Image (tube, rainbow, N blue to C red; front, side, top):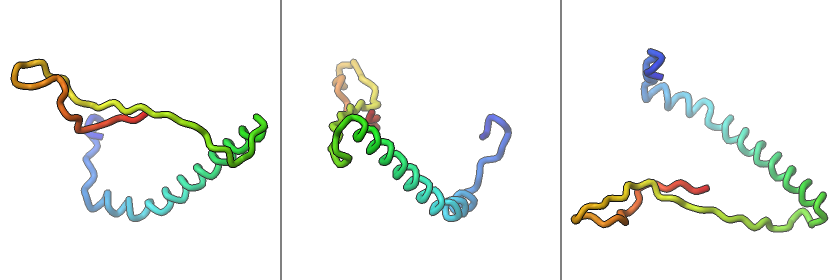
Length: 85
């Protein structure tokens, strides 16, 4: 926002907007997830599986931390942020 010379919003404005649009966003996300579940059910049916078949999934987490290589620090510093894919 600052790069296009647009003033940063105040905390009051951000809170007011989140109060105003929060419920609408929750409803939108719930409807979207409902549609996604229907797509998965249709794909399972086309594959010949029951619609309540569990889907095995895997994920991997990568810690977003710098690796230090000095004498006082080990290269395995604890991560403060993680990205899960």
